[in-house]
Image (cartoon, rainbow, N blue to C red; front, side, top):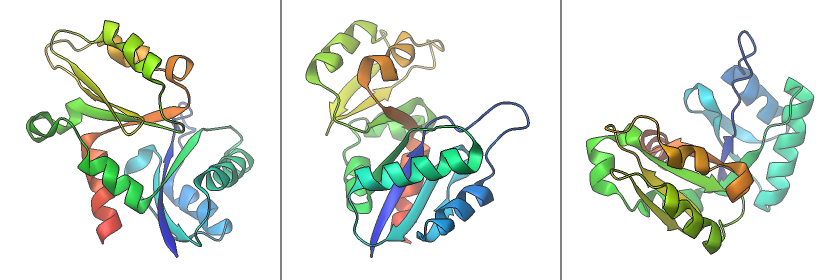
Length: 179
């Protein structure tokens, strides 16, 4: 058995239409994914199944999500060891310790191209930092500049399919994998 992390992109569907995590776990069980568990109500799922290509799991989960909840949602899947590597590769440990909610990673389905990373440099604010690590984009935001241009620039259109998680979520998912 292999453990996986699945990250759902923007599952808040509007007033009265939020995806309930127990329903998400039930959906995963219906796919015969073992021991599905969630973290916070924004679409973080950990489960076990036989070793499978992540692209195949993404497709299965996206298809089931659309059938169950009536809306397509992009889902990024990582093997447990890849998630632990992502967490260990946080290039902003000091910032994460000081303000975990101000450090985030945009987890990409496919590694972000170097030219897209270079283009994002123009949007980095004076109190912000950005670094590509392993095909994902890490950002340390500033509390001094609450409306970041970088956040808006790090979009699907510019970077490809991905979803962002703050350091609190990244760390807690890594802890769940060790439990």
